[in-house]
Length: 100
Image (cartoon, rainbow, N blue to C red):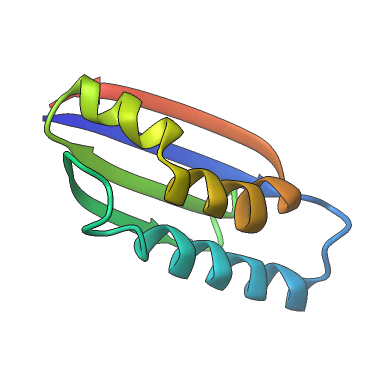
């Protein structure tokens, strides 16, 4: 199994209300990919971090293998969500991929 974890920080210019909505949109968009990406076995987006957090949200995904992860990266449904719900609103993206 391969894990793909992303942590994002949203853009500073977003108001608190906008950040809440953006996080909800990212969560629904990415979790809506469940069952649509070959080899993806699980996807969760966490948007309610504790006050000790220094980032805004986290994606936690699992794939059958590294080839499935590579397919996810270019899958049209994922690219659509990334281009419309994620990239326009995030300023920092950190990624950690590993075999579990």
